[in-house]
Structure formats: C-alpha cells, structure tokens
Length: 379
Ligand code: HEM
Ligand SMILES: *[C@@H]1O[C@H](CO)[C@@H](O)[C@H](O)[C@H]1NC(C)=O
Ligand SMILES: *[C@@H]1O[C@H](CO)[C@@H](O)[C@H](O)[C@H]1NC(C)=O
Ligand SMILES: *[C@@H]1O[C@H](CO)[C@@H](O)[C@H](O)[C@H]1NC(C)=O
Image (cartoon, rainbow, N blue to C red; front, side, top):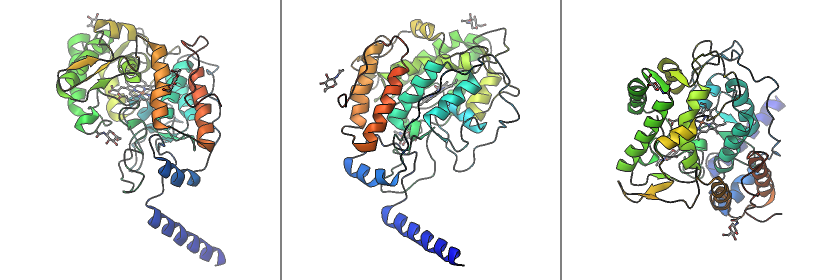
C-alpha cells in the first residue's frame, strides 16, 4: 500500500514535470544545433555515458546464414523508428539492432559487421560520422531515423529528433529511393522512385541491379534533382555518400553464396528497400565488403561537388571537399560542420565529443589522409 502510494506520488510528480517542461527530451534526440539555453535545459536531464571504444573486426568473416531463427523479421510497431537507410532499417526489423530503431554506435558497428559483413573501417567511419552530426553524444545513442509521432511544440522539435533523417548533415539529396528534403518526406521509401529503380535495373541490367545500373541511376537522380530542386546540394560528406550508397547494395545486399558478384536480383532489392527484410534464407557476403566499385559509379558520370543556385543552375563548390579531396572533406567536416553544430561545448558534452572525434579519426585507417583536426583546440 505504501509502495503503491509512493508510486502514485512519483507518477504525479513526473506528470507535472513533463506538463510544465513540454514532453521530455528523448535520450536519442540529436544535440547538434541546439542553443546554449536549450543545452542547459536538456543536458542535466540526460544520463551520461562514457562512449566505449568501437569493436575491431570479428574473428570469422566468411559467408553465413543471417536470416536465422534468432533474428526473425517483425514489422515495425507503431513507435519503432525507421529511416532513410535500407541497411539499418533491415537490421532493426530483424533484431540485429534494437527493434525500436535506437542504438549506440558500438551496437551499429557490431550489427553491420555481424549481419552484413561490413568492413570494419567502413563501418566505423560511417557510424561515427553519423553519430557526430545526428546522435546524442551525452547518452551515446542515435536513432536510425524519424519518429513519426510528434513530441511536442517546445524543444524537441521534430527536426531535433530526426536522427539520421536530419537533412543536410548525413542525409542528403538525390537518393535513389527517397525524395529530396525540399519536397517534403526525405526518409520514407518513395514509390515512384522505386519504380524508377526497377525500370533502370530492367533497362541497363536485364532485371538485375549491377554496376552499370548503379552508375546510370545515380546520374539520373542527380540530373533530376538539378532540374527540379532549387536547394539541391552534394557537398562534402554527401559528395562521397551519394556515390558510395549506389555501390553498397551491389556488395552488401547480394547473397554471399553467389557465383555472380555485384549482381542483385530485383526481388531481393525489393525485400531490402521495401519490406526492410532479408530475402528468405539470406547469407551475408563471403568477405568483408563496403562500397567496392564506387570508382566506376563515379567515373561513368563524374559530377563534381556543388549545389544549385536556383533550378538548372548547378555550381561546382569544393569548399567542403568530396570524393576528389578526402583530406579537405575530413578537415571541413570536423572544423566547419561539427563545430557549426557544437560551437562551444563544455563539460561532459565536450568530453564525449572529443572521444567520438578520436574514434572517427581512427576510422580513417592506419595511414590517414591528414592529421587529426581539433575543432575547439587540443584540450
Ligand atoms: C554503418 C552504419 C550506417 C549508417 C550510419 C548509415 C546511414 C545512412 C544514411 C544517413 C543514409 C541516407 C543518405 C541519403 O540517401 O540521403 C543512408 C542511405 C543508404 N544506406 Fe546506409 N548507413 C549505414 C550502413 C549501411 C549498410 C550496411 C548498408 C547496406 C547496403 C547501407 C545501405 C544504404 C543505401 C543503399 C542507402 C541509399 C538509399 C537510397 O539512395 O535510396 N547502409 N545510410
Ligand atoms: C527531412 O526529414 C527530417 C526528419 O524526418 C524532417 O525533420 C525534416 O523536416 C525533413 N525536411 C524537410 C524539408 O521536410
Ligand atoms: C549489367 O547488366 C547488363 C545486362 O546484362 C550488361 O550488359 C552489363 O555489362 C552489366 N554490367 C556489368 C558491370 O556487369
Ligand atoms: C579551423 O577553423 C579555425 C577558425 O576558422 C581556424 O583558425 C583553423 O586554422 C582551422 N583548422 C584547420 C585544421 O583547418
């Protein structure tokens, strides 16, 4: 009885707190771009965690059944988060990632290695780049997309809880199967665009998504955005991911038992992109993979980094680097993008950002293209 009363009083207190403060800020909400006032309000209510170091490559990196009994597919429930990445969506729907779509960087790296045989440096680079711009460095959590349920008018705004769907950070324009943020929804599968994906696979790949299809479809989507989106931009990180993501499905969505590498059957593509599901009985790749083939996707139609200044007016702009200049990309990503999101971090926020910046730098490999950049000085 006493316990029940205590519980009741606690519930009322929590209710009153939330009513007077707007809805509680979610533990996975991105902190990038918040004002100092917002940070002062939000950060003390978050449970801090020291980010643990990323895992190395797993001991066994051969093909194996990953659509197994321990990882049954389940449709996303009402409050589960899904987003712009067909790879991560699939892993959440099979329980390789938490099914609610909220994970730590270490969980993401472990999941993409275990279920997709993603190469260790690529997994670390992609994950820490995303976490630094779209994650919550205090709680060490990131969401794989947008929560459809609104979370209240005061902070958090929907953009703040957008996770990797946040436009202009990691998510960007000219995606193969998602619309540009300028036109609204930038994270859900877009039916007409998926029809175009199939049409190109039929026209250039005889019913398969292969390297030729990847190069042509990649270019087609860039041309479409140039012609219609006045705010179209492929600069910095996006100039790299826009080509890498066209190559990912060739290596990562192709069954590891195949005798035809980089040859993805349309039915399998449909499983991943539409249903967020492995093809039945799927085996992961037979060796660690990531964006192999990206050079030929790029060289088939080498579009420089740049942006539209009004429709049909693409202006090359290399200020944030890109495929041509990885060192410039890295330097600007840290010194301009991340410092822009976090101009003056202090306390635990600063400590955890520094830890994640180090993890990202180390993901560049044993011979990094340039020295580590410290956006707020070295200590
Ligand atoms: C390692 C952690 C990963 C993170 C943080 C991540 C994040 C993202 C993000 C933010 C996007 C949206 C970019 C955009 O198109 O605007 C994206 C797209 C994409 N991701 Fe991932 N991803 C990861 C791993 C993977 C894996 C393992 C695959 C497996 C194939 C994958 C396949 C794709 C593809 C194909 C797209 C492009 C979708 C399209 O153009 O329609 N990703 N990813
Ligand atoms: C892009 O997606 C994010 C997250 O879902 C959303 O907050 C944002 O409003 C979208 N951008 C536009 C221009 O609609
Ligand atoms: C893709 O498939 C088409 C049709 O079979 C073929 O002509 C083309 O050479 C293939 N591309 C590659 C890179 O294998
Ligand atoms: C980072 O930006 C600051 C301020 O603009 C500048 O002083 C510094 O030289 C930059 N660091 C690098 C490595 O570019």
